[in-house]
Length: 108
Image (cartoon, rainbow, N blue to C red; front, side, top):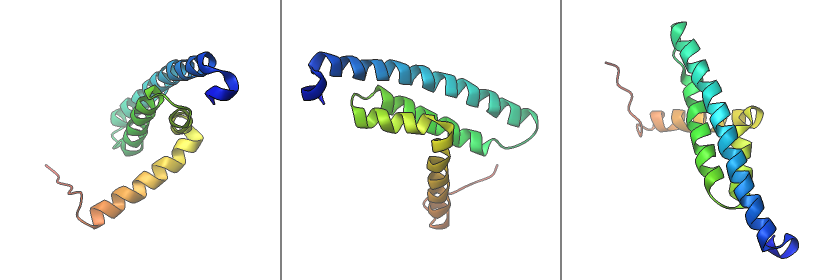
C-alpha cells in the first residue's frame, strides 16, 4: 500500500486508525460496562455483556497493532452488528470446549 499512497501517508493512516480505534474501543467499552451494571442490578448474569467486553478488549489490542488487516479486523469486531457474528462463533467454541471438558465450570 505504501507504494500507492507513499510511505508517509501509509504511516499516517496506520497511526490515525490506531487512535480512532482506541477511541471507539473506549466508547464501546464504556457502553458495555453500563450494560453489565444494568444486568447485575436487575439480577441477571451478564454473559452476553462479558463476551462483548472480551471482544472489545481484543478489538482494542488489534487496533493498536500496526497494519491495515489488523485495523480492519479490529473495526469489524467493534461494530455491534458484525461483533454479533464473532460472539456467535465464540459462544459455539465455548460450548464445544465445555462439552470436551477443556473448560470446567465450578459453582461456589
